Length: 342
Image (tube, rainbow, N blue to C red):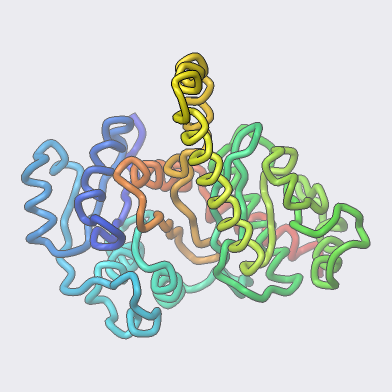
């Protein structure tokens, strides 16, 4: 029996919270009992939900927070509320209450700002990156940055490569992390000067923990030949929204095609099994949970509109991050390339 992972949760963040939080915890515990949850929020409401699911109470501890952060609240206004909010208290629990990781479905901008204020940055890292998971033909991609940093220089992108590779190895320890820089072409002379400088740094500083595979174009992201895709936050966020929109378009159009007439409906019945697998592969709930990399402690951001099943997948991600020793892997990668630069 392994030691339980202690996860601090901002239980008031995101749509339909805290109900989906409690329901998500129940799903996660059905698959794995090695969790303990610190729940931060309105203690009266949280205890009411837990009283309806008494089998969860031994896995949870409730911490009362006077305030919460609205989804449309500015990061500055949120930060000014201090540790009275469930989000701040959940992050601070890594320093005060022995939580190993923090999970929130709340305001992304506020989560980033408060995480930086409370946990601080890892030594040598200037900017945190928001990394997420995308499906590919072979397994899953780690993609970063997804919007935390609009402008990046070669130092930032190099750090993202090292941190993204560490995240991939934490989540998939049996796989080889193959890093690619998102660019407008695969040739070494393509792209802007920042990309070219980043390419040069990574090409000259090989690592035992990942393979730098060069440039990758947007239409190759899903191939799975590279599994850590690095770019600036502006480009990464556009790529993410484009991928999400394309996925919704495909699933919607398939439903329309197979509901046009009786023949199409019969065809759907014949193709039910492969269509089900297709839908499951593209189900965004399976890839729910992005992580801020570069902080002195791990913070995972669940999608605010996900349901309980999606939230349970973000709990699973927290488990893999801690058991995979993410922070140690990041420090190892960063120290390795820094030594070679000097």
